[in-house]
Image (tube, rainbow, N blue to C red; front, side, top):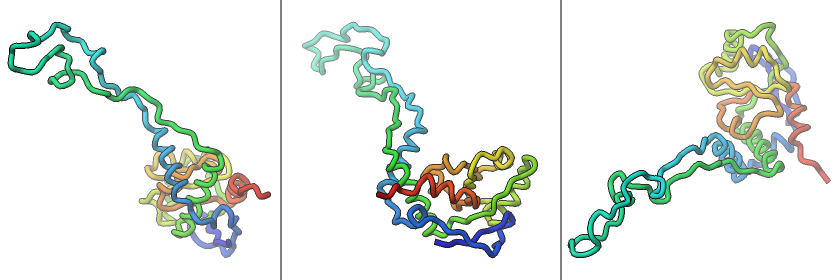
Length: 212
């Protein structure tokens, strides 16, 4: 699968690059994408919710009135969950929402997300570049060249570039991740994905399924 390569100004260079078909050209697996997004969002939950149950609530244990003869129901405790200010029945308790996915499932989710973005024509390959110094304005101009200055975008670099990272850090919706660090949610949550030229090879090595 051949695609155009763009320069930092967002203009075609006249060159093309071959994208691995088994990474960028598969049929997206929707269920695997669902699992990957669910796992990511579950990992963001703090799980610190807590409600007091009957044994944890402070209050008198005296019986409110005698068992019989009142014409009303039996009431054994002011902490009864049916009363205002009473305890909570089966209330939430602190828990960890994180769950594990098989490595092959995670890799398939990334391939599915990349392939889905290729089908949407939301992926562009950019020539390798860097900045001499961290400069937010330079990154804004970079995004403006692709028409992404007011949209969610993600730039995938082959490794950590401190100047690019710092230049994008203050821009909401403009993420920069390494080729080893992105996930399916990052890709699906972006309007457009910019992949530096050297990252294509890294992504291919990391995600190409082992044959045989």
